[in-house]
Every structure is written in C-alpha cells, then in structure tokens.
Length: 606
Ligand SMILES: [Zn+2]
Image: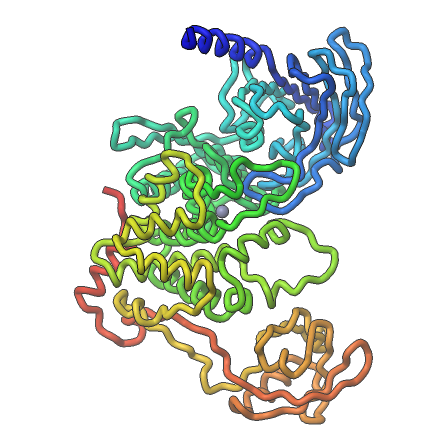
C-alpha cells in the first residue's frame, strides 16, 4: 500500500513539473544599436502572481552587479495577446499580479560590453552572459528552460554549453542554475574539435569555438596547443569530469572589440581577449586556468556558493582554493606543456613568494578572510577610495602562493606526495560526488591524504585559518632554486608611484610599514623638497636616494592639500625576494635536483 501510494504521488509530481515551462525567444531587430528583444513565456507555474527579475550577480563573479539597469520597455501579455498589468516594484524587479498559468513578458536589452560578466550585442557578434541578459521567474528554479535565437546573420553559428534543442538555434537547460551558467556566443565562429578518452573508455568531445580574424591553419595550430593543455590537466586528476552533455566548449573571442576576461562554467569557458589573434603561447595561460576550473570550483565546489544566489553578492571562504590553486595550476600546466620555460616558471614563483611575504594584506589577513572580500573586489565598483593596498591581497596570487607552499611541503616532507595528489583526493571526495566542501573538509582530506593529522592541522592553522609567514627558501633548495633578496643594503622608502608629469604627486596609498608611510606621506601628497633641496623629477629623487644607506635619515618637504609639511624619514631596505635557478647562479645541479624538477614541472601525459 505504501509503495503504490508512493508511485502514485511520484506520478502526480512528474505531471505537474513537466507542465511547467519557461521559454525565451531572442531576436535582434535593432542590432546596429546594440539592442535585443527578449520574450519570456512562463507556463504552468503554480503561483497566483509572478515575480520576474534581473540578476545582481553572475556565476564565478562574486561582487554585486546591477544588470537591471540595461533592461527597459517591459510589457506583459496573456495567451490571447492581450496586455496584462506588469508593475515595476524595484529597479530590477517586475511583478505580474494576476497570473493564470500563462504570461509572456517582453523587454528590450541593451548590451555593449562583451566579457565574462556582461553582454555585448553587435553586428560583429553577439555575446550573452545569461545573468546580464535574461529576466527569470522567482520560485521557479527547477522549471526546465527553453531558449530560441533568431540569428541576425545567416553565416553565424552559436556556441554554448546548453543542450541543443529540437529545432535549429534552440537550446535547453534543466533549470535556472544551469541556464545562468551557460553563456552564448554567436558570430562567424571558427570551430576546431578533438576528443579525449577517460580511463574507463568514455570519450568526450572538445571544441575551440573561436571568434577571431585568423587563418584556418593558425587556428588549427592554436587548437592543438589548447588540446595539449586539456591533456595535461586531465593527467593531474587522472580523468576528465563527466561533462553533462558529453562535451566541453572553449568560447573564445580574441579580437579588439571585447573586454579582457576569462570565466569558468560547468562545461565551457568564456574567454575574451581584446587583441588581434595570433597563434601565440602567451594566450594559453588563460585557457589553462579556465579549463582547470572544470574540476576546481565547478565540481570541487565550496559550500558557500552552492547554490549560487543571483539576487546578491556571493561570499565564499574558499576562493583561495577555488581561484588561487587554479592560478597555481594555470602556471604549472603551462610549464608542464612546455609553453613556459623554467625561467618564466621561476619568475612566477618569485612573484607568489613576494605576494605571501611582502604584501600587507597577506601579512595581516588569512586566505579565508581575503576570499570573503571578493564581494567587493571581483569586478566590484567603488566610487570612493579604498585602502585595499593596506588590507587586501587578492586571493588569486595569495591562494597560488599557498598552493606553492603546500606543494613544497608535500614534495619535501613526504615521499611521492604532491598537490597533484591532494587535488585528486579532493576530486574523489568532493568533485566526482559533487558534495560541496567546507574548510574543515579540505583539512580532513589533507589529513587522510598525508596520513598525518598533525601536519594537516598545523598547515591549516598557520596558513589557511591564519597568516603566518612561510619559509619558502629551505624546500626550494631541493628543486635547485635559491631565494635571494637583491635589494638588501640599498636605501629604500617604499613602493610609491608618481610621474614627472604630476610633479611627484603620490598616486597610490602608501604601504603600511614602509618608511614613506611611517613618515606620514599619503596618496595625493606632493613631494617638493629633499633635505631642503627642491625636487620635481623622479630621476632627481632616485639619484638622491642612491646616496643614502638603510638607517639613514632624510628631511622631506611636501604639500598636503596645498599646505607645506615637513617630516623626517628613516630609510630601510626593500624586502623583495627573487627566486633564481641554481644554474643561473653558478651552482651545480645534482641528479636529485633534476629528478625533483622533472616530477614537479615535467609533463604528466602518459
Ligand atoms: Zn579563475
């Protein structure tokens, strides 16, 4: 009895859900002026009134964005085409107070900013990031979504991770979360395809859908390199994710009319580079970074952003891992695929070490705390001035610096362990299963992976929950890399920007702890005298500083809001680090160093 009742209920639920449907149709009658006409039909939604709204955030972009500002001329109709009442109740929220199972809402969208967050509509190409383009129905997250595009140019093709529908240029998404995560690019796209196979024999299709002015042969050569990146990334985890419709697409616009960006999605990425396309290895890093995300963040996903909230910013404690570890792998995969050499990888190491040791944000706050600040900095806009240079370090390089520290710890303190193995363990526990992780979960996997609870607890306490300095120099020696501080012994007062054109007016916030900060100088102050001698050029300042030593004092005259101030500054020395390969420093390479580097930086493709 219980069983048959259950089946009956299930049947009823299936019926009621399948009757619900949201269908968009998109056309471009005024494409010359960057407009689209969008109609959304909501059918069978079990509500008496409907709320339609534009999003205020976009998957993978954590700050608030007001997408509703570019939507206007909103109208609603019933099934017979008769106008029904629609009220604008907030800047980006529209209600249909009387809903009887069918309503068609129409609006105009203006879009002229093609990147990973916004949309761009032009006769050269249409680029739709979904939250920037589509109004959605509140409380109907699980309702299947259908979308049909009227192509403005018969030579164009559509590239997207959406599932193809039954008719040309129509697509399907199982619900709001997937739809919003599925950007669309339509243009004169050059398409190159390849296939990769998983150890279980399952094959997946890959496509480079490139919107660029380029010769077919150079696009093919570039696609071969992107394929190499997909293979190196697959080798880190031992397998590809089970892509929802068997396919992964690189939506790439490389032309001067887009804005620079890369944005990850479940089965695709939207890459826009505002340059003329060339088959250049320098363009590949963004591909390596974005592709790594199809494991790390799309499936190995922090609890704090699952599900994604489209009505507000999404604060996460895990972006140091989601973005930072991905940045580390973007660089490492470029090295493993031989698109970067040892010297450029070591340059990256220098920059990460300086981020961790020498930026005020990383010295004062944990990776978790800076991750939470993404709600303001991830393409967020501040009209007023901020003090980010003294209280914030980006979770991208900071997280990558933590990944480097963990990789060095695992490679030097354990035999045959590495961040590759840790990422694979995270993949098995949280990614393949799609169970969103907490910080404690990440620590537990490290504990299980190393078999050393104390090690995992210490690492997380010091460097993830805390912000203790990490000693990179000792483990780096095993890789044949020496860490130097080349500026020691030279007088230094801090990193400030000024140009001769603005007569030594300081352009940036001075940095906490530096001599110039301690002497009281700040942004917009104008240096006019050093030791009573008038100065107006940066070359004068530089040559005066060169005559001093760390610990020496100098008298500075400066204008603060027009008033002359005098202060005394005590020089220190720049703490900047530089990582140098042993062989560049005349040191021998032992067989152990060569083997260490090969395991770390060498290709992992079997
Ligand atoms: Zn990223």
